[in-house]
Length: 353
Image (cartoon, rainbow, N blue to C red; front, side, top):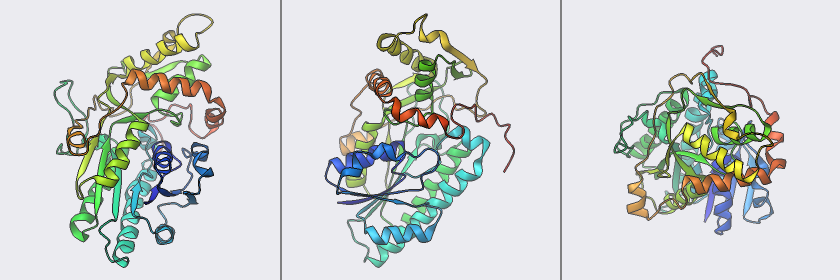
């Protein structure tokens, strides 16, 4: 099978590329190589005859069309996106241009390719999205996001992803484009760019720096190990029902404070500090504007229809993740110099575009 992946040099995209090649699929990776992309994520893939890479910005429709026509994919997996909520608060225009206009370009290029090819039944457009489009949940553990939960985005990032989801559904209903959509919970694992909570905590702890937690740390997230997510994405791409959406979650709800304390305890065991505990570095900082209280995924549809379920608990996944970062300083050290990394973003005080 030939799979075109957008954003394949990113965190989730590279996990999908690695797994797809491992399973014998031919993969064409389109990535603009913006600040969070890292081709080192794909060092193993680059040695494979099944892998191709092309630098391409999805905001350039002509370039996208040319790439799709060149590769002639059976499946397009659209992961390219601006994804950091804090950056969306400070600079929303990039999120509008990439996540909305870029998705529009992808849909139009895919539609043209599909129609010229005679509308092959095997073709699929898989749009990868987030649970943040649903807004925020109350503390009641019985209440979770389902595929029928109304959209209620609260940040420029989630609003841009909600918009892209609606475009994908519209292209299916209006033009018949064969699509599937997935909405995932918070990912973590190896190759996670060091601006998100888990890698920030690991790397700050190793450097003896404060471990910043927004507000009082009570915000709850459902944590999904990235390799489990990649498994689910390929499964939906190959077998999901057309026009349908699937929620993908780790079934691992934790408050941010609980999560950080777990990371600290793993580091205390694997690489103890010379004095004190890593939890001594925990520092509560001013909360992010509009910070959603809780996300939780009901993943029963993908479990019941396609047989997928997460393979690791958050404790097991964090152990693997911390160990990976301890063993791969050569990967993460250069990324600390990239723009915005290690700087408090998302305060809402940045100048309007």
